[in-house]
Length: 187
Image 1: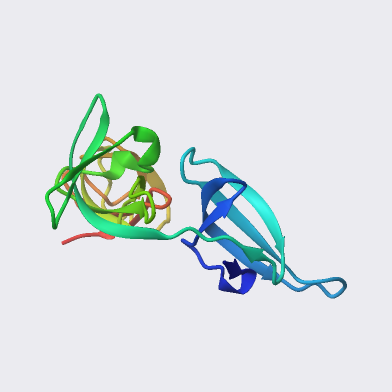
Image 2 (image 1 turned 30 degrees about the vertical axis):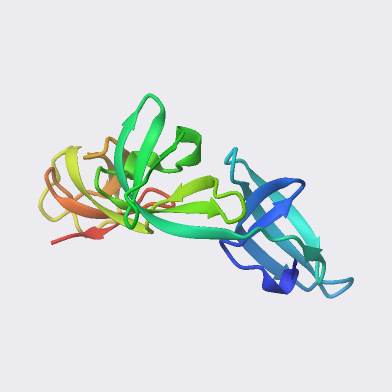
């Protein structure tokens, strides 16, 4: 059991009989009335995000989960196949359990969240940023670095992201996996 003071991003709760991850939270102390905590909870099975408000100090049931490093191998009709780096056991996750899968390339390290009691895989999490090669984008013009204008680009995994005008084809870039945003050029 935990209280609202223990809330942090990534905490897994057993809420309404299902597992949810806290993606955002905010403690609110209004001038009039009791304090409360606004949260955004993502359902681990369905991926749906719900907004919920907890009264301050209320007890919630947490779930024991473990993160284990795995390597992404391939995708087939059954889903995405990952290999445990320590035991070489393979885990297959359906597409619904792998958010931002179009930013994953073969051989990449990911962490898979397992329910500690049942040893059931829950979801795969990519690192915060990944390095990808731009395979197609419109050519940029010299001197286009002054403005903050973006153009569409396709990276090696097939994902479409917005990049600055000075990024050309065959340029390696760093992409934020949480919102598909361009971070920086990689040398």
